[in-house]
Length: 459
Ligand code: F0G
Image (cartoon, rainbow, N blue to C red; front, side):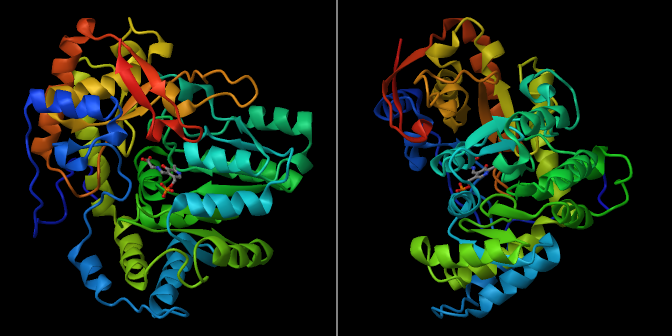
């Protein structure tokens, strides 16, 4: 069991990667060239990179050793069988189809289970997940608890589903129009907020009554399990590994972006208990990804992933990982900076609506704040607000989410406590200067997932 009072890293550093500090003039130019979109900056121009925790983890020496054990046979790689057994043992799911990353699994799952006119309820949307549900002809319906949309609510399990919202949807459209409930652990767009085991159990009961599946976006399941261990009654003495297994056992299948929790730079999978869905996915994967024993991954990547999964559920690891995020969050709270509370597990989310209260949402406050932060110190963050939310597919208007956030996403096992201090000081400087910051206008807008490539100009 981990020591809840200390989050010192349970490892030491064996190799380093130099990063550079640039001048303000340099950053001004780089930012302009990137259309004020942090996704379009070159990484060499970034000092501390908090764009995402996706694919940015540091692998362990064991994982690097695993790369050397890659069996690159086209069919039946021994690394696939290691990965398959690891997923069965640690994550509980029966059948595994590897993919190059999470969205490829989302694509297959959506195409296999969703029919045109279906509804897919979920605990808040995620960008790629929702897009694949829509491309399969479905409509996403947000059934997360109201607290999740309030950055100041201190509710501990903001990832919980509101069962009344689900019941209402079932009553309105009928259970046969709902192929599955799409739940994520933890909820990224809500600020990295966990779902409780009690809520999942209640959801399981309700969905069983109507024969509706539960599909699990398990991208950050270990972090969710850690929060259950920390805050949910009856779980303090269970290991994170046990909690992960129990949580997954209550669902019918999962999509995984292994680039987060599982400590690898690339990889993912679809895992299901039902043979028929598996059979369809195994057939589909050869069209889009590769043979069913490698999906989009090299043998060596599957080996590193199998090892990463086992490391990711160790209590010491996860306590240090989330502990570092909490450290940064507490520091910002102490400085009076508005952030999403409680602090999430994979990053600290600045509340841009409160931070830049004078910038209206159609002038992209979160996008603007992310740009200003880079300008101040070379720290790169990510917009999670109106730009990410895209447009309403019927009216063509912007979707205006309640949460307009800038995500300071912490890569796993990469930065030190001193980096956290530098980040907090930069955020504080921008906060002090906030009155001088104006919004932006969008001058280029791609059709799909516009936040990745959109370009802006300062007002
Ligand atoms: N689900 C969640 C909850 C995610 O956070 C992501 C990716 C995906 C699915 C898609 O997985 O990138 O492997 O295809 N999130 C990244 C992020 C991009 O920065 O939050 P992918």
